[in-house]
Image (cartoon, rainbow, N blue to C red; front, side):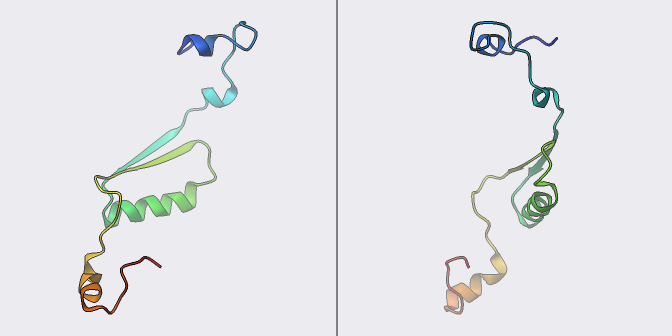
Length: 87
């Protein structure tokens, strides 16, 4: 039996010992993507589509920004050919 991580985890509703659930014992594969540029975002979107239904895989995207700047279209936005809102 593994050691409880906290006092609350070690006691059940009635104060007795609570055993970890099977899901707690399942090892997760963790995929960490560093950088939210074109490659990082593409990888995260691909993995989200292909691995979304698997409970044993966790995908995390780490980026400094909370947006993506698609620079090839900046001249179209500046010229008024394209709106700034995403579609």
